[in-house]
Length: 70
Image (cartoon, rainbow, N blue to C red; front, top):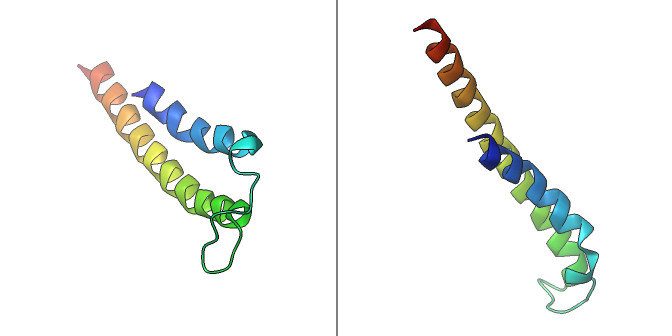
């Protein structure tokens, strides 16, 4: 489970550091160049992935505490 958590947290960083993949103007979205709307989309995706990672971390911690009590 911790690997999935790490992937959720690392994916946005890798996506933003790989500038060559989004350093272009086409396709436009509502007149906004790809460079800008791609980054704004990743703000939303990063929020969702961080929430997922947090929930998975909580589940993992509960499972570990439950396993220690037995």
